[in-house]
Image (cartoon, rainbow, N blue to C red):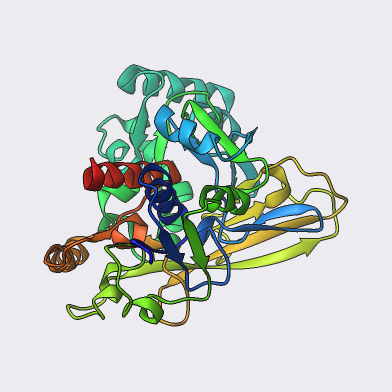
Length: 368
């Protein structure tokens, strides 16, 4: 007899299952329709290289509780992402910052822009590009237009299939201009990748006497069984059989290629905002500093999510979708002991640390 059902073995479901099994000493069945654990953070080894199948994942957080929790299940390879962007035929620093100014403009011009940016916003500030575009200063408007046209606009349109102005500000704010020479993509206190990979991390989280895992198993395969509680990390509209309509998502397709050279590019991730149909190329061996004569890369192609044809990746945040999600959420509240969480269950973009934080908070809300 299982007291708890957890649907989905991504990081949210895995943490929830572990807390239920360990803190409450209750039996947990965790299921996943895929043939592997770990959801979109799943990785695997090929030619001695750990491949992030569903795109690059770098764990980063300022939350010590989340860091300490995960550290019980893995040793860490400390890694800080410093991506590049292909601009006007050469590679420059991303995110666009004061270093990038000197890579794309003359020294004198870059110095002038640097001084103006620091004077206006302060050193260390992160300014969303759509905010910078509203500045009345002629030089700052020139910088904002350059970044908007060359770094932001086409990449964002490829990624979301929409012009930037039609995308929720919570999304566009994630792509700021950094007023600093800090070339790291993240500035969090803790930044690392599990030494043995994310799949092994999830295996360790679920390695508990009270947890049973069933892969290749859909919720419909077990929903007739009796559980005291259900924690659902799949898509909330799918759970209710799309009775109010279908929430929209962006999906991704990854073209994984083996290349006959030791290194293909200068960094783990390189963005291509203006050239080609893909948005970025990931070179996987950088993440764990793995050595090999050949390399493996992934070209990332954003695409429309189509039910039954590809996977959901990014919720499309707009007024219509939020109103639709609220209908499903209200429907969920009428069912006792049913809880939704995760990027699909909450219809919300989560970084890994926020997904873990969400699972920990939900556990506390339900049981404390």
